[in-house]
Length: 387
Image (cartoon, rainbow, N blue to C red):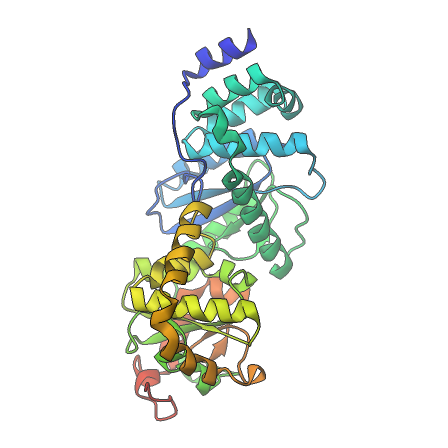
């Protein structure tokens, strides 16, 4: 009886649908100038209250802010029952049914839904509510989606100046992550600070000194790795990594968003570091992506912005093109022959980028331009020439 009531109440019917999505649908205008990540565990906390508070905040700010929901697995809630509820929620959210799913969890409790998901009839009914076929609830992409969100949450928490141990938590424009109550007072303060215009006083230009700039990594040869964007773009973000699943790749979302919003301003270069098997695989795929013109697709894959099915298909395509990269790989291998000579991490115009600086990438570039000519790095005599 419960199954029939729930299906009728939510007007849902099972249909073929993708198992998951790269990101859950945003709450608010996608083109809003300020984006906030909302990290939450569907089986823990009063998420429905946060949902309503978020909708009110978006209305109060007249659509100038949008929230991206990110599902995570809380450290103390890792039972199979909780996992079933999380994957069901992701399936529903990817179909644009987040609010309906949150209402149901709040009304029925996650424990009761977990029991229903363990039963054949209950599982069929809840799949219908999610708007997917019952087999979709077993898709590994759903668990991968949650693991990716949990990894991002942990990375932000580790690099945050605030003490954040568990969801729900928020990050404005990818900056420090912090907890907040259902009134979202801390979120409002953080948004207000971001709404103030970014300015650099010309009177203080002389006081701005870029420390720790390394010219060799400011503008490496284009052939050293995969380059997204032209060699003559004013700024370059360079990342050195030993393998595809390097955690620094998770921090490239802000750079990709900035390139999409302000094209022709910053290039992104990825260089494989080291001689391990994983490093060789990354180096080979970077070369193949360049040859095939799939730089953006591969960078999105590295940043975990691609679902697993599309990611595996792209890897197969790149691996099949390795023969075209033999000569190029010899150059790349020579450039990284001494693994210790290459730095690690992410660098902007030769300066190392931390989590906070990368989240404020646009601001960092403006600070650079306040102390240099916009093309100084391009025409600098210290910059190594492209072969």
